[in-house]
Length: 329
View 1: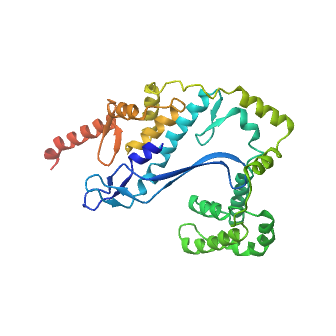
View 2: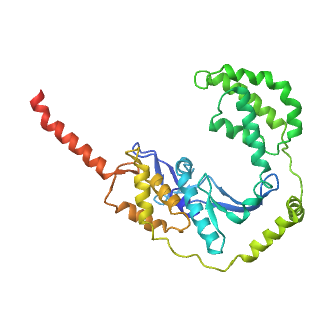
View 3: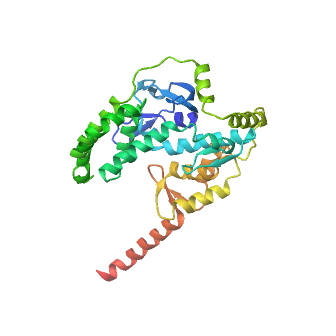
């Protein structure tokens, strides 16, 4: 995934023709964490990409155009999930795909409720606001409140909730589109309340203490099943190479994407292929080459791709109109 992210790294273009000049290099630091902010088990990585990239043609350093990472974030996520799923299956873990398309270890699903306090807090908080406001919050509004609630203290929030409920009640009369300014003002005020009820200072704790807290949430039976599962894994096993067996996945992605669209970005097609092929540890270069060589696709400017049948139909329609034009003038 990091290799793919580096490959799309670029700087802003200033030539009046292109938006981005690809540099394909960055400097980054990667960190692995085993717990979330609530000290629940959550293995994940953080990669900090420094805002500098070197242009190969000039040798000069430029600021990174991070918009490309945002545009292709779903594709990069699909690359990550495919590799992760393949590695899990290689060591003997049974994997299933959740509603978001992410791989989940079946044997550990029973622990999900014990270690999902943070998720539950966020969902309850968003649900409260939406119920009171009588409207659905946008993704941006949910994200803002989620970030403000890090280290959230439910008890403190309960004490100030009633005092500020009347202010939030004003959301019910505001149209999300026509009164965006007023709506934003009220939600900003509420976000500040959430932030004031959240802990923003760091608490020193050891890895052993974190593990003890986590183990304390499990029953003896759960601990025993967890240990048995770990013992059943084969950490030295090699990933089965099915990376090139993706013809059916490409066919599915094309049929799925172009059922309601005539043009998409090429990386959105790659994403659909990877999601359908998840766990095959797809050879990315081979996948891209197979897509480019596919007879059912045509490629345009700006990394756009569409179905060849639609293109031929459009060309045929244009040709017909050109033939008929003199007769109808």
